[in-house]
Amino acid sequence: MEKTALIVIDLQIGVQSETAPLYNLANVIDGVNQRIRLFREENKPVIFVQHNDSDLILNSPEWQLFPKLDCKDTDIYVNKTHANSFYKTNLNDILTKLNINKLEICGAQTEYCIDTTIRMAHGLGYHLFMKKGLTTTVNNDLLGAKTIIAHHENIWNNRFLTFL
Image 1 (cartoon, one colour):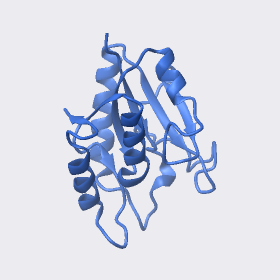
Image 2 (cartoon, helix red, strand yellow):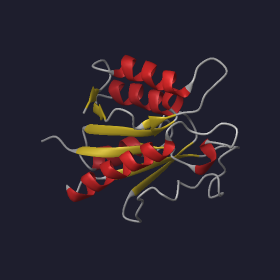
Image 3 (tube, rainbow, N blue to C red):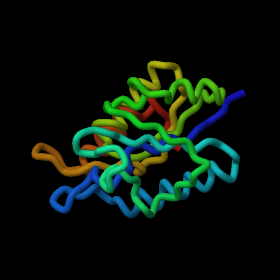
Image 4 (cartoon, rainbow, N blue to C red):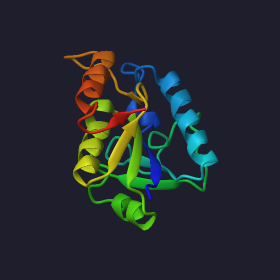
């Protein structure tokens, strides 16, 4: 039997700044919260992954999840120190223990932690799903956030995951 979990990656206060805001953040958070509600209604696990490094220091204000996210104490929380949510974390152990073989992915940043986690999860044999538009990133010196997101969604589509 297939079991699914929702993985919400790095929707943390310090991922953006005043000069580099996350693209379309309010809509992304609203969409993520809709997915969270659906998963809870179906008694499926919601897992929040939080990055922890010299910019996002564990338990600092910047490390915290955005306050508008629908987080509960009963959700599962994973800390990571690398773009890959599986690297030196207990995420795969948690998923194995819960017999999860399907993952829905959302969060930040599209070209870093989301992309790396999607590729790793695919390589580990998970079936992956995503609702279009539920990742975000910031503009960089080469590309705008909207282009980065569209580019990655195009690469992932039917290669690494299926869009809902």
